[in-house]
Image (cartoon, helix red, strand yellow):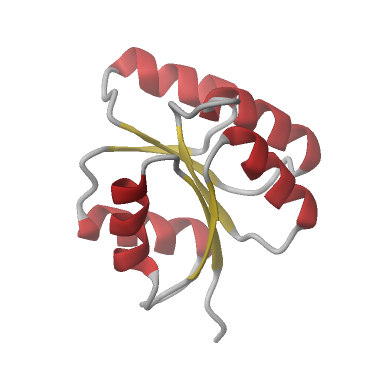
Length: 122
C-alpha cells in the first residue's frame, strides 16, 4: 500500500521537524509555512490529510481551513495548536477542522490521528 501524503502547515521549523521526524517513515510530507501556501498546496491536489497549525503568518490556520473547505470539502484537516483550551478546539472545529491535537505533540497521538484520518495501517 502506498504512503499517504500529509500536508503540514506549520511556520515553526522545530515543530515541523518534529512532525516530519515522526511521520516520514509512514507518509509523504509536504510543507506549507503559512495558510496561503497551504491553500495553494491544496489547489495542486494529491494530499490525503492536512495538519494545520492555527497561528501562522500571512494567513492563519482557521482562515486557511475556511478557504480549503471551499476547494476540498472532504479532505481531513487536523488542527495543531499550543492553545489547548475548549474555546480553541471549538473555533477550529467551527472553521472546518475535523479533529484537534495539542502541542507539544506526542508521537503515539499523532500516529493514531494519521491512521484514523487516512485509513492507513502502520
